[in-house]
Amino acid sequence: MSSYERIAELPLEVESLSFEGRELVLNEEFTRATTLIQLHGPGGETGVGEDVVYDGLDHVNLQADGPKTIDLAGSYTIDSFSQKLEETELFPAPPVRGEVSELYRRWAFESAALDLALLQAGRSLPVVLDRRPRPVNYVVSMRLGSWPASDEPEKPDRLLRMLERYPGTQFKLDPTNQWTQELIDVLVGTGAIDSLDLKGQYKGTPVDVETDPELYRMVIEAFPDAWLEDPDVNDQTKPLLDAVADRITWDAPIHSVADVLDRPWPPKMVNIKPSRFGPLSNLFEMYDWCEREGVGAYGGGQTELGPGRGHIQYLASLFHPDTPNDVAPSGFNEPQLPDGLPMSPLEPRIAPTGFRWQ
Image (cartoon, rainbow, N blue to C red; front, side, top):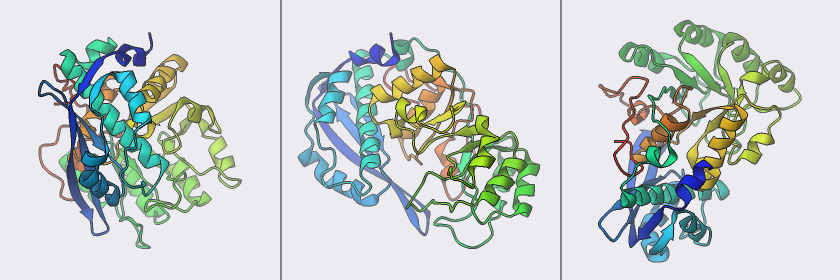
């Protein structure tokens, strides 16, 4: 039985829905907004998911008009609810960024439905899947400079401060065109870099990085054990990347198993961001495929501000707890680093019922 088949027939009763906004000012250029999707059952239960669409206008429209335009009341199974979502317009106004935003919102509704169905069944996801939650290894994902990027040289100060307060923390960094050999030498000296997100698959976004074969050469040589995520593969970079194909992973292009099979090299490792997959069926198919084919996986997040962060930590604990999961506690994203954050690995915090990381 596949992982999805184990959850597909869970009964689900939805009486109403509501939305709750969250915001965090990350810098002068960007305020992160998300929306909690709340599905209410007739017995007073509430299943919650988190919409991680990046454009604030999409959240404003959903919170203002969603209760009037989206009707999901009814009796379902997880699978029939997913089919209902396929037929339902989840954006009161067209999404700013199109298809990717549609997948993000779809994941929010589907994760809320899974939470509610498990609450109503009085069961937890590990019980239904027959899997044991394990401590979750995490890395902290960050860009050393500002974004949108400036021409100023980037500095390691924030990373070094994190290491002072949280020794042993490992990192996933975004190399940019402002990286210098001096900076790279400092980072190598920390021994704390697990993976490098080259952002070569992003186009027309605030986090774009102009492809520079010299930058690729520098980081490939300087970090011989680091994973290399989302390179831009072109005539200039491909010779460099061919030599380290076993270290290349993918994130932004991956929404299904078919997308993995379409990569230039068969990957040894992939980044599974649940929000990129949309329907639960696509996500659990990916987990099963990786396990069957012996392909490693690590989780990834979207700067969640609420229970969505717990969802990705939860899934990592069940499917890939030992890899460099980009699921660090949300406090690491705050402009002022708080005290008392849990160190890696995170002990499982599985609620007795529902899809909840307590």
